[in-house]
Image (tube, rainbow over all chains, first blue to last red; front, side):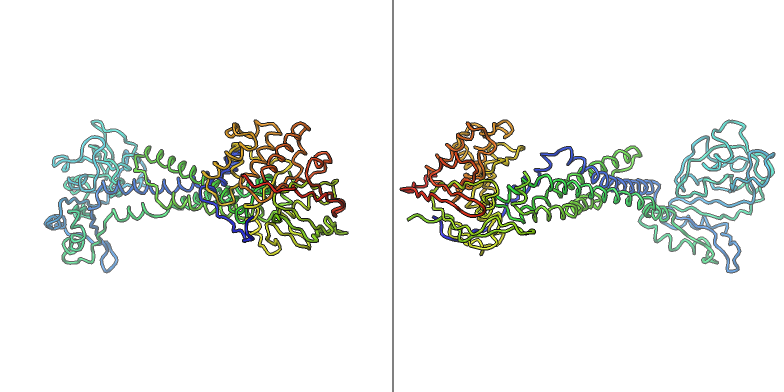
Length: 401
Length: 237
C-alpha cells in the first residue's frame, strides 16, 4: 500500500500537447479546414499586398538603378525680381569642364508650338513644347530612339524634328516614314525619329525637339539653354552637385536650380500607396472573420466533446490541461490557416512579380507578421472555449454521453 | 490486516433545487485492498453519485472521503486530478473510446496524465491489452471491435496505470448477457490477481456474482454482506 503522500499532477510533454491539439483536426478534417480558410484568406491577402508593394518597389528601384542615379539637371531659376532667369550660353561647356562629369546635354525652350498640320486651331497646342536640343540628349537622359533616327549635325541645322514619346502620341504619329512632317512655328518640319520614354526626364517626353541651329534660324530661338542634363561619375555626384550652380552661372549662382531626378523617383517608389493600406485593411477584416470562425468551431467542439472532456478529467487531466488542449487546438488551427495564407500570398506575389519581371520580395514583416497574427488570433479565438471546457464539471461532462 | 483503499464517513451529497435533492444521506463504507465489491441498487438510489464521489469527480456536501489514506477534503482540484491519474481507474457503461486512435493508444492514454513517456505508456498498454485478451487487436480501431471487446479495451485502459482501485459504472449495461458475462469473468480474474474493484450496477444477478454486495436505496446503504476475502491475494500485476 502506498503511503498517504499527496499526488502531484504531472506535466504533459510537448509531444503530448501537440498530439492532443491535433485531435480535433484529425477527427473533423472538413470543419477544421473550412474554419482555417478564413484565416488563410486574411493572411494571404495581407502577405500578397505587402509582397506586391515591396516587389513593385524593388522593380522600380531596379529600373531607376538601370537608368542611373548619376543624372543631375541644371535649370534656369528665377531672378530676384521673379522673372525667369537665363542660363549663360557657355553653361554646358563650362559644366563639361568639371572633371567627374562624363556627359552633358542641353535643351532650350522656344516659344513655338507644334501642330499636326497648319489647319489645326492654334489653341490646340496639346501642351507640347518645342525645344532646341544638343545632339547628345538621348544618352544623357537615358533614353533611345524608338523609330527613325536622332538629329545629327546635318539635320540639326534643317527644319527637322525628333518627337518625345508622349509628343508623338499626341500628334498621332506612331511611325516614321519619308516625308512625314508636322507644323512647327510657321512652317513644316520633317519628322526624323521618335524617342522612347525617358523616366528620369519626363519633360523630354512632351517635347518636340529640333537642333539648336535650326531653332535659331526658323523659330527665333535666343540660344539660351533652359535645362542642362549632366551625368557624373556615380561616386562623385554629390561633389559635382555642390559646384554645378556656380559653374553654370558664375555671375548669379542663385538663379540656377539643380536637382537629381532619381531622388524624386525613389521617393515616389518608396512612398506608401493608399491602396496598399486599403487592401491590408480588407485582409485584417478577413482575418477577424476567420478568427470568429475558429472561435465558433471551438465553441461547437467543446459542446460536442463533453464526454471526451469528462473522460479526460476522469483519467486525471487537470483543468489546466483541458484548457491547454483546447487553446492549443485553436492556435494550431489558426496557425495552419496562417501558414497556408503565407504560402498563398508568397505564391501570388511570385506569380505577379515574375510576370512583371520584378524581383520577388516578401518582407519578413509580411510572413513572420502573418504567422504571428494568426497565432494571436488563434489564442484569442480559443481562449473562451478553452476556459469553458476547463470549467465543465467532470460529472456533468460524463452525464451527456 | 489489509489497508483500506477507500473509506467513507457519513458522506452526504445534496444537489441544489427546490426542494434540494438529497442523493446521499450519510453513507459510511470501507473497502480494503484486494476487495471486489458490487454496489447495487435501483436507479435513483444514489449509486452513481456515490461512484462520482468515490472517484473524486465530485465532492461530498459533508462527510469525509479517504482514498489510499488521503482525505479528499484536504486536496485541491489539481491534486484530485493527480490522484485520479495515478490511483483510480474508471470503466464506463459507454466505454468512451476515441475512434480516431488505435486500440493500443486508447489504452495508453489511460496513463497520459500520470506523467509517463509515450514509449512507456505504449509498452504498458501492450501488457494491459494482453491481460484482457486483446493483445492481438492493438493496431485496430475501436470501431472495428464488438461491444464486448470495446469494454475490454476500456478495462485495459483503466488497468494500465495499475491503480489502487478500479471503479466500474454499469460495465455490462450496454452489452448482451453473453458479453456481459464475459466482462464479469474478466473482472473476477483481475480481482483474483489482486485488483481492487468496485462495480456499480442495478443488475442483481451480476451483483450476486461478487464476493461482497453493498445495497443502496434512497441514498443510504441498506445492506452490506461485508464478505471480507479470507486471504488477500498478492498484487501480481
